Length: 334
Picture 1: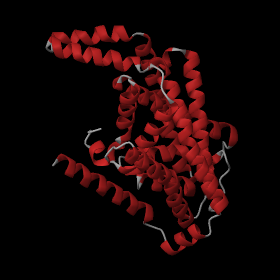
Picture 2: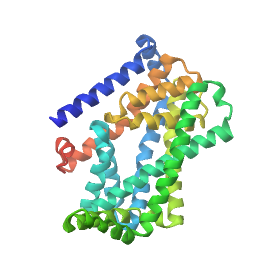
Picture 3: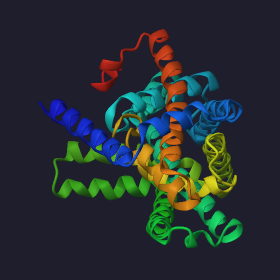
Picture 4: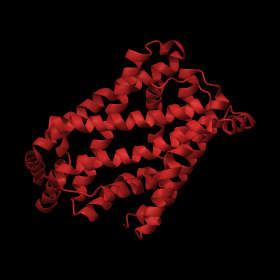
């Protein structure tokens, strides 16, 4: 029953967001914008999207380094499988599936491997905030004049999330440097919990903290941050390429600003960010760069297809090759 309710909620949310996305669209003009988009820039966006998964796998393998040796082929396959699962299953299920799969194949701790996914998400947030700040401060400080409401919304979100990202990195740094202290603190739960349960929680917390090992070394953290910047510049380049293909006057660095609303849109718990992704792109393209609404709607649809289509196809192929079942993965039966 709980799964049925969750499915209904997710579908309702996706349909509602798509309705908002299409509320003022002329579908005839949207289709015309899609059919006249430049194929060369669309192919560039497709190539960039494929490249981002190689970069994601390289970064993840680097984050996993302190936990043990891993093979890039396994890291890449599980990365693609995880993102494919997140694109077709609700609640970003792939974020749990891929560390579990890789841990099983490489003999790592699944708990510690999952902690590296947390590190990834924080690095992603910091990278997006840095690129957004770089655009606003260096490349186009006058963007607020175009749509002050849209600009203020994005700036407010950035100001709210910046201390959260920095604070989380600080907590991870402490946990990575003192997993035994965390273990000792959690053991104090014996005062209110049975000793066996408190011990299990303490061991879990210590293992989880070990997954933050990359944060322990400033040099490794800087290198991981560099990988994250490369990743998000490549993602932004794909956004820019699709926008140019549709004739939207977006500078290359303008896509750095577009990352902020898109990250929020993708965070909506619908499979593949359906609805949230589309409305986020339309909001940014029309608000920041004066794009025609129908053109922005067409570009959002194509950009989403390019962003999730290849990983779904390749990911499902890997799932079949590895003898996995999508339904079982959704139920945690991996």
